[in-house]
Figure 1: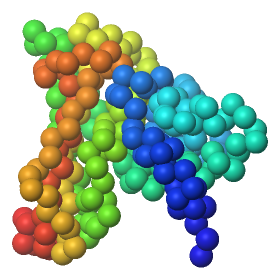
Figure 2: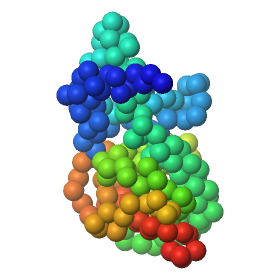
Figure 3: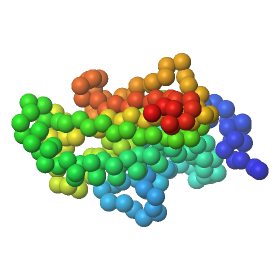
Length: 228
């Protein structure tokens, strides 16, 4: 079966390498995880992978879209980058629902902590199990940063919908750290069985360990009952 993404990558290996290199974290421009809908979502939430790539200032996408003659090339390039981005961005959609549910469930506790603590934020830990993992467990770390970026932006939009003004270090925010565990007989365990990834908790690219969103990836070769 003909695969235009592979054909394009074979014809343009340098461009393929560029588009498979995620931009820096601070390159985000009001981007959010794409919704599974073709309608325009409120608050500027991205509704497609193409829109997400454009707002993330993804390499090549803006240049390719400037010329209508490059439409086929752009489509093939998007097909190529969609392979490593599909799982992190799809997971970020469902993660936003987890965030919303967790926030409403603990709203009173969060307000109490914000009112009584010297630090105006609370941290919650969310664990996700990927049972029967295969290709998902082989994604390079930079693509898993996209999961953090997308869920962060979803969190910001959700706070705006709730009537809360997000101000870094000056408002009550809920920081969500993530733990994704890949479990399955076909999981290839890397040299480091746990990988740690982090990004700033706002669009300011500030290197502050205390104000970053964190993701840990754990790998277990075997079955769930053996890992837990």
